[in-house]
Length: 60
Image (cartoon, rainbow, N blue to C red; front, side):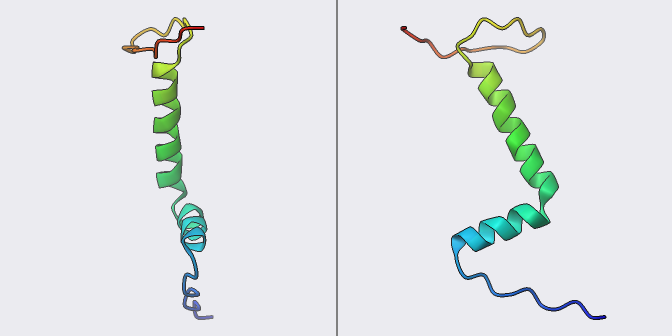
């Protein structure tokens, strides 16, 4: 059985959905970096050893 050619991309949303389905490792790495960055700048007093933190100042 031959592989059919992929359908042409109709919209940016279609391209994004196809990219995430075909490149799961890339999407996982990008999401992991975003989560780690969020932890590093979170305004909470978390004791995380070995990571330099620069929390966002919050006046609440």
